Image (cartoon, rainbow, N blue to C red):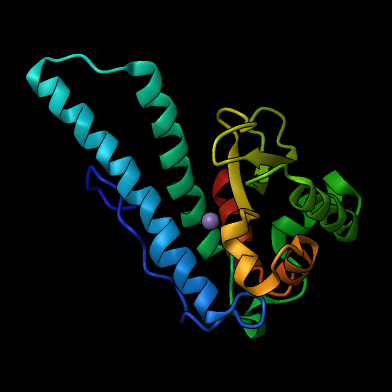
Length: 204
Ligand code: MN
């Protein structure tokens, strides 16, 4: 993220059709250009409102504002992570390597067991949400989060290293109501190098 005081919509690190058949060009354009953009704009509007009320010395409804900011900023940050932990299938690699592979084996017993648990978290997320792989800095353990909306069930101060968006807006054009097929296809397009690097940074 830049040093600007507002969020900005990042460009995708690949072409709009680069994730096919996992995500079609039409689906990715809609998801990135409209849905992700809406969270960037939504969060920035709240930051602007806070700046203005601070300058004017006027009051703001803190409860409503912070609830909305958590949702909008969460939406932006999770999408920011999501695009970068995806890659075209020919660059994605089937399995993680490096320190990530070691840590997954240590926590879950095997990569297959991790996949099974993460997929189950993604498929069973109620309504709109995410599955996330994260690391607890206190124990060093890898954890799976099942995030509702963009901000519910998130563990405070635990670092997320991989996410999968299971909002209907992420897959409905391509898969209709068949979320399990979308989750299964995800595994062909994980940028394991990126996920491994995110973990390496936390271990330094
Ligand atoms: Mn989304």
